[in-house]
Image (cartoon, rainbow, N blue to C red; front, top):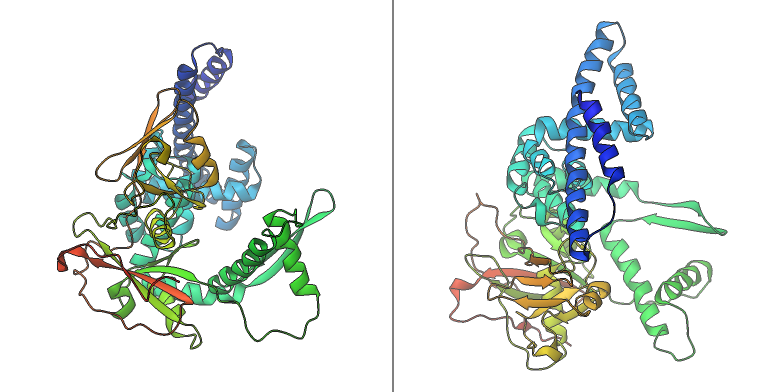
Length: 453
């Protein structure tokens, strides 16, 4: 039986299956089918690359120009997958990358442990790198890929790209400023999508100003608009309403995490901007040095010398204080629920306070609103071990464990960072959180200087 006949028979077998079984069995089958989908995507990648190589050679041998041969191949793949030629081009490019440059990621897909979309994110974030650099990234992240969300996969791939090609990453980031633009496209019900592509610093600042206006408006009893509605109204008012102008612009606080060497020694280790992800070290230094009006203060975060984990301190209260909330956001980066990848909205007790969970940073974690609500549903349980791993068991008895991502740390081939105390300047507008190895100190320290306001 040919491969096509086997695939058709398998499709028919799936269609004939019923939905009988317990809830736990249904979850198990859904998981198994998801793994099969990923394995099928890996098989498609191998077949796509084999077809592209064979068809391109045949067309060129027949006298077709190479560029036209590629167009033909991509269009055929697009049709075979019920996609456009543009998407067919993406499928062909991804197949070539996986088969010839990132075989370990392809093997993870064949085992059903990472989706085609996550492989696409890796290929997209590393498209500009050399074959050698892609091979290094393939070896570095393949074993960790099964436990990563889409967002974390993209951030890790981008971070490795910045690490291996820091100068190129910084140059591309500076050149990308020329691509800033505002676009519009239709939306249903006489609405439009107005999109602004802005430099990172200005984009975060604009969003922060609108968010601040929304939080202020929602505090009034007579305002029943949602946060999104207030932000949209504020954007319209600020753009369309003529005003005399206010010289006092609202201060926007950016949380930028970087190593002490990246700050002071021109080290290429990428920084991490909360709410955005990895940024090239040179761009992070530009954020600090190019704007003379930016006021900066520094919080030192101490990391474990062996594991790289952020050290914790106790908080003797039910609600996490502001400093602890900042710590949890810096440590967890994204929602702690495995594979969620949503932005952190709440500082949460992993083991609920009502169930005896202490208000400590070990028991604390950053969650999106949905995951924070779901984990406390009937039948769901959560536990935290001594290493900070949070294990959540669903109502069907399926356990899922995860730990926070490591903070920015030195590349394996780089020397250990030297200890220096950065100078403090002015009032906070840009917060730099720097990781220091803990073995240099007699006890863990997570104090802020100057104190939080």
